[in-house]
Each structure stands twice: as C-alpha cells, then as structure tokens.
Image (cartoon, rainbow over all chains, first blue to last red; front, side, top):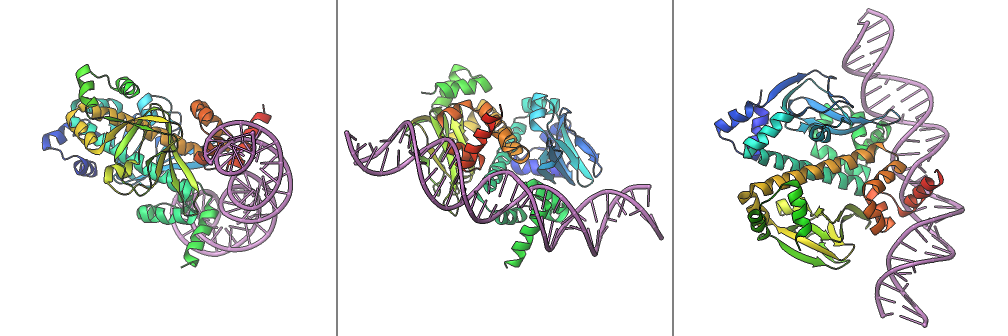
Length: 193
Length: 193
DNA sequence: AAAAAGCGTTGATTTAGATCAATGCTTTTT
DNA sequence: AAAAAGCATTGATCTAAATCAACGCTTTTT
C-alpha cells in the first residue's frame, strides 16, 4: 500500500527501517473511485494526498462556470490545496479522481508531528516543495514565452503518461485553451512534419 | 547590512544570538547599481540573493528577442535561478537591478553547509519554498481563471509597492501583456468607477 | 438494446488583444 | 542647455484564439 510513497521518499532521503515504520504509523490510505471528490471548493483541506495509483486533478471554477485545471497528479505526485491545508482557510479549488485511485494521506496533525519528530521528513518536504516550485516556475516561464506549438510539444515530452490517460479537452484546460484550439494545434504539428 | 534578512528569518524561525552569528558567518553582502546584472542567461547561478534594499527582476528572452519578466523581488524577497543554482546547469534567465540594491548572498556551499549544520536553516528554507510555491500557484490560478481587470486589481492590491516603483510596461510584461493593453485596462478600470 | 453523454474534429464567425504608428511628456545622457 | 532615450497613452488595423454550431464516433447509463 505504501510502496510508491516510500520508494519516492527513499530516493530523495534514504530511511532506516525503523524510521520508515515510524513514519508509516502517521499515514493512512484511501481509495477513490473515478469521479469521486477528494476535496471540494469551500471545504478545508484536511490532508495532503500522495498518489500511489491513478490520476487526480485539481481544478478551479470561475464566475462564468468554466473549469480550469490547475494541476494533474499521477503516481508519485502529491496533491492538495496547500494554502487551505496550512492556513485552515476554505479551499478555492476542487480535487477529484480521473481514474480509480489509491492514495496515501498525511493529515495536518501527522504532518506537524512528523516535522517535529523526524528530521528526514522535513528534508523530504523541503525537497518536494523545491521541486514543485521549480516545476511551476518552468511551467509559468513556458506559458509566457513560448508558442502554443512549443508548449504542447514540451508538455507531451514531459508527461507522455498524461497524454495517454487524460482526455484531450482536459489537457486543453490545463494549458488555458479551448478544446477546439488544441485540436487545431495538434493538426498543425502533425501537418508540419 | 543583514537586518532585513534576520528580521525575516526570525519571523519565520526564531534564532538565538549564537545561531544567528553562526549563520551570518556563511553569508556575504553585495551592492548592485541600477541596471547591473546579478545573473546572465548562460551563466551558472552561484548564489541565492536576498534583497535587503532595492528591486530586482528576473526575466527571460525568447527567440524573437522579447523580454518576459518572470519575477520581481523587493525588500524581504529572494531571487535566483533556482534550477541552475541546484543543478549547476546554465541559467535560462537574467536577473538585474531596477533600483540600486543591497543583497545578502548565500553561495551554494554556504547553502549546503547550513542545511547540514543548522536545522533551523532547513526549516527556514522549507517555509520559504512553501510560501514561494503557494504564491506561484495563486498567480497561475489567477492567470487561468480571471479577467485581465481582475488580475490587475489583485496585483495592485497585493503589491502596491511595485506599482509605485516599477514602470508600467514591466508590470505588463510580468502579466504577459503589451504595454498598450495594460494601459487600456487601466483606463477601463478608472472609467467604470 | 436503446438512449444519452462524452469526446475530438472541422467550419464559419466574432472578438480580445497584438501590432503598427504617432504624440506629448519626463528622465537621462552628453 | 540640448539631444536622446524612455515612458504612457491613443488611434487604426490585423490576427490568433474564442465562440457558436454541427457531425461522427465511442463509451456510459438506463
């Protein structure tokens, strides 16, 4: 149940068996069926979810009722409304499952206890946050300075799994485009080569 | 010279005098004149800069030669090409001073030593990365789901200092707009109230 | 097994923002 | 003190992407 989580953890910060057992005692697991919510806008985000299996997505809904996908999370990734999790404010987005999923959950109290008690947990979180920040920064930089063709090419190269497993109109939403526009971009790409 | 840095640090993680002295021994200061570079595309980013005074900006230049501002950093903020800093790869953007600036620099070795030797430094970095990630996520969410009017209003409310101290066409660049468009948005806002 | 919903594509039209161009004003350079 | 560069604004035009609409195809629901 915790295989992917600890594989990921050990890769970033190697753990002894006893440390691993200690950390495990703070975690719980959850299964989510396709289309089920992990979090709904307005709720307080009670835990960070690590994806063992499946795909989740975080999305916001604007005034006009349009969904905008903020983030995908597949195996080995983490998802939450971090701001809500840390502050206790209401979440501003929704998180649900695009495939049946298995999650490792870290509750707020577990997170805080682990930070206190297990120095390597803090290191793990630091590295995770750093990577997440860098990834987001790259995404932002590509949004602002590349053509749509380029952005889509980079996206497919970076996340080939998502292209396989997520419907195209959700990729469009993630990129801030309409499905029609993405369809046309794909055509332009295939035609020019 | 280190007042703002330690004020910021203590606010996140309170330090004893001796811890503070220990940390200080790893830091250095640097003054930068307006328009001087801290980092140029292609260089390796050798240090993280904490802004004591002044404003810096990070920006990328695309194929067609257009500048795109990725980030501003004013007093209390930190700036670097983090990816380059951590991996030793060439930087993909430029950082320069918009006003004469005073910086606290943390070199790569200093950073690594501090992470090893001073647990509170790791906590500080963890919190800093977390905040940076959340801020970036909010920025991205607002890009994707709000109107330009809304985004500009939020920007002015969030960073009133920047509006005062940074030319408008740079704000436009940061928002991914042309100066003309931002000018028209501002007019629309003032007319409708 | 039939009906409904979801998905990707294509075409026609509209529109928001970019681009091109010019002007007045302020700041910097010489 | 004069010249040049930088800046914000406005107007006219162009264009890339959104919107509106329709169609076949597949998957899900009933």
